[in-house]
Image (tube, helix red, strand yellow):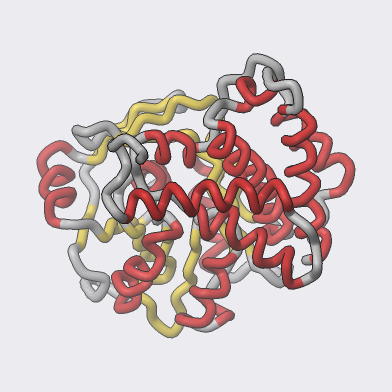
Length: 315
């Protein structure tokens, strides 16, 4: 099975590197500078699950070496359009597209481009970052890659083979029969966390130090849950108890990556993670006052960033 990974950054490099380590036929679609670095230094992963340095196959165009059996997308949501353009030549009649993005909107976009049958659900729960020299650092004790058919039907051959490669490495996840529910579960957690961390400008533990902090967090979680329930994907009492427990741990230093991006003046996935949750709520008449406040804050940040105002004193 031939697999193409878009990019060799933090998530793409880790996922593709581990698949390559399992013996899978993996190729990375990268830019010229990254290709030169990989040819010179190899793909370097420093991980709690074992360090590896390996030579990998790379291409500069999606049309090179294709079509592929599996195309894995690990881009940020705001880069989805350019990602689609890059991988389109690699997608053939029997290609399976596996997006590892947050939220749900990308599913609709990809299905419209490549056909509903080609696009499956997928997500990554891996704490990784890439250093300036291109090394991929995996510092968290967990690493999970999940994917599956969105209609709950038996998995196609490509996903069965991908599952076998994941399990060979001992990475958690693999095939998930209820992948859409899994996507919603993660989105509820991420949307609540990202909205609150960016609005309050602090970690989940910092927010709990505010007098109304915990109450506001739990209200936001409930807003997200109502949207998921309206879509037929309520996590249930047990699932929600896990979310609430995770986001209300006193002293926690956990923060959404969106906060780190915002504090650096970088682009953020505001529209995809928070804005789309609000849009879906509006369609079914669900009020989301906390999410609306957080989203307006993020939109203001993006407007200021677009005019080059980040890093300059506000008037």
